Length: 444
View 1 (cartoon, one colour):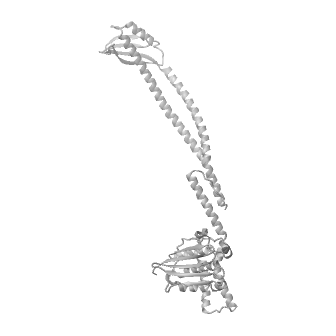
View 2 (cartoon, helix red, strand yellow; view 1 turned 120 degrees about the vertical axis):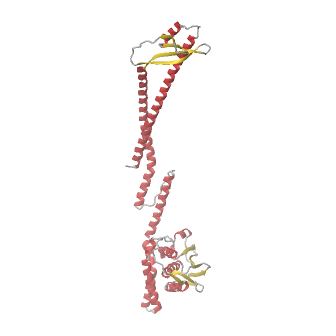
């Protein structure tokens, strides 16, 4: 059943029940009020008769029998007079039509007082109540009232039905719009915007759907360049291998043990990157095993730089290392090599010919800091917060040509945090970037 039909059904049933209950309660209350009113009118009529009789009785020094007899006939009542000892002292019969059915004799007794207000006895007044006429009148009244209530119920149900239809459409319409919105999201159309509805819950849902749309749109754009980013990450070790192998083939580079070890290291790095590529899809993956050991960072970075020798020479880049002696940090050696490889590779791509790259190590009391700084193209301010997002790539001229900051920085950030450190970046567009790695000192 559609939501609009459900709302219509339940609201209509609710209105019907409320109206029926209201009618029943009103009828019961009204009937009780009418009965109470009629009873009060009867009592008032009896009191009036009693007052009249007391007045007639107190006119003369003795009982005015003729006056009371006439009065009883005129009022169609019976009157009995008792003294204070409840002895009957007078009786007047004015009732007529005594044999008519559906009549009931009703009697009430009142105090009889003289002109001075002194009680001198009691009077009993009796008359025939016409039950048939009374009941018929009441019944006719209730039938008329029932018809009125039936008309009210029908009109109320029609009006309620129309009102519920209107408001159900008002309620369901934005939900239907959001449903269409989600269908478009499902089909891959993310360039949508939901309007405001001036209802907190609906506006909250609208904001969440808009956020989801924008996020999916960004993710879709990131995925478009996914293959290129992966190729970029794998290209660095492959290029180093190719250049060195071509150099050996052309007898430009001698295949000495140092070069062979360098090539082996590149193959191992490439294998490690392929095995751990899944880390880019789950920043919270803690299942990667760490082999933490105290590492001479300066020596490890020097070894890593050797694999970039040809690239540095090709662009005549000056790479400077500034490290104090015994700059040791407890790290996972293989993952740290990949971190440094990614950062140096990005720095080389960011600088022009004759550029500068500086890697500096600084020891503080409880932490060690490594700064990798270049004077390259830099990163736009609005992109800095996103460069560590998976699939994100800075969209400027330099990065369109080289692949830019892509999947590599996501892996870099993940590995740094796995090793207990953190990474930050400072950058000015057109002046260069500085990546700052901070590791808390710890014992192996």
